[in-house]
Each structure stands twice: as C-alpha cells, then as structure tokens.
Image (cartoon, rainbow, N blue to C red; front, side):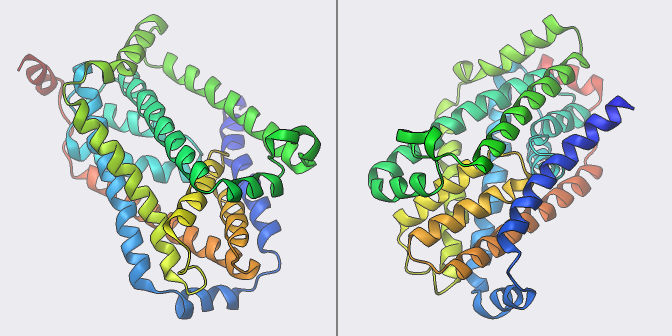
Amino acid sequence: MKKTITTSLRIILPFLLGAGILYWMYRGSSWSDIRDMIFHRMKWGWMFLSLFFGIVPQILRGLRWRLALEPTGEKPRRRTCTFAIFISYAASLVVPRIGEITRCGTLKHHDGTSFAKGIGTVVTERIVDALFMLGITAFALFAQRKTFTTFFTRTGTNFGNLLERFTTTGYVVTAICIVALILMIVFFMRRLKVFGKLHSVLHDLWEGIVSLGKMKSLGLYMFYSIAIWLCYYLHFSLTLYCFDFTANLTQLDALVIFCAGSYAVLIPTPNGAGPWHFAVKTMLILYGVGAANAILFALVVHAMQTALIIVLGVGGLISLQFLPKRTAAYRITENIH
C-alpha cells in the first residue's frame, strides 16, 4: 500500500506542478488561436528540420553511452543503447527523471549489462553535460550580459537581492524542487539495493563513473558530446524560423533563450512542461515578441518536441521486441574474446 502511494505521488505531483503552471499561463488562450498558429502561421518545413535535429542527438547519446561502457567490460549492442535512450526520454514524460533508471534497466534486460555500471556511466555523462551547459551559459552570459540581467531581475532571481525579490511562488517552487531532489536520491539508492549487496553495487557504480578516464576513444566521446549539444541548440533555434514574429531573432538571441529553457527543465515536470514554457515566453517577451505570440510559440514548439519524444519512445519499445536478447552463454563468450 505504501509503495503504491509513493509511486502514485511520483507520477501525480510533477503533473500537478506542470499543469498548474500551464493553466496559469494559458487560461486566457483560445483553441482557435492555437489551431491558427499550427495550421496557418507555422512554417512546417522549418519545424520538420528542427525535429530532425531532435532525433540525431538521441542516436548520438546511444553511441556515446556504449563508448563509455566499454572500459567497464560491458559491450551492449548499438541498437539496444539507442532504443534504450528513446524509451528513457519517453518514460520521463510519465515520471520525471525516471529515464536514467529505465535505460539502464533496458540494457540489463536485453543485453545483460550491469545495472550499477550503467548508472555509473550515466552519472559521468551528466557531469560532462553539466560542464557543457555551464560553458554554453558562460558564453551566452558574456555575449548578452544585459539580456540575462533583465531576465534575472524580472523573474526574481537577481542574485544581488535574491531573498528580497523572491516571490511566494518562487519559494514554493524551490521547496518542491528540493523535496523532489531528495526523493529522487532516496529512490535511486533504494533501487540500487535491489540489484545486489551494497558494497558490490557501489563498486560497479564507481567503476562506471571513472570509465571516462580509462576510455581509449576519449576524443570520439568528446566529439559525440559536442555534436549532441550542437543538435540540441539547432533543435530549438530552428523553430524560431517557423514563425514570422521570431524569424528576425539572431543566433545569439536563440542561444540565450535556449539556455534559459535548458535550466527550466531541471524542475521535475514531464519534459519540463510549465517551467520551460514560462522561461521561453519570458525571454521572447524581453526580445520584443508580443506576449500572446510568445505564449503560443512556447506551447506549439513544446508540443511538437514532446510528440517527437513519444513517437521515438514507442518506436524504440516496439523495435526492442524484435531484437533477440543476449543469452548468458553469449555474454561469457563475448567477454572472453
């Protein structure tokens, strides 16, 4: 009973948070405006090109993950890694952040890869991604300092007087994020214990984390990382050309908005729904886009990107059904060779 309640809360609370923000933002919008935006005002050619750059980084993530697993002695198939990535993003739409657990479980189920080693390489991957994101943010912050200053001030995150300007909503969201982070860590540690003795699991976890230092193809790993983030940026920036009211924004403008949106999705809601809309809408308004257009842009673009994640997730799940599982004998033979 307790487990059922916990699982239900992990699913319901993020949805409620995202839904609450979306309702607050779109309570004055009409379906006719949304339909007009999608079927009459949006340039579909640019949107399809943007969606292409949403597929590529997921494939590259699969290849990069396989590369990171090699120093640990694990050799999963490329297709399994890619399909696991597809499924993980879709799973996170149901339970935010569950994708990391899901993809490691998928690899263990189909290719017999150590779950703890998989988690370890994911931790390393997240550290690398965080460093890239910090680097991108530093560049964007330097390039357009005035824009970021205005954003921090208007959203109550002006670091000079944070406590004075932070709104009640800001405190509530921060508290929810802290609680969500604690619950995620607790869930993660409890999940690890299922797969063996804690000492053994932590050893495998550490082996996965330090795999980057043992990697023979570190250059290729970094190439994949650069390509992934470039594709992420194009995935968003190309959507600006879908609409006349955002087509005149520069690539630096797009980079600033991209950074704001990337940090917003750290708030645990399905695919960042709600926080991402708010961040992107706010930045667009700061760049001179009308509030009504900015709100609809965020809604339409996020909906398209979410639909892509669902399609890839379903496709990955179906494809795995036709991929034979690796037997224990095969894995032993593979390790010998």
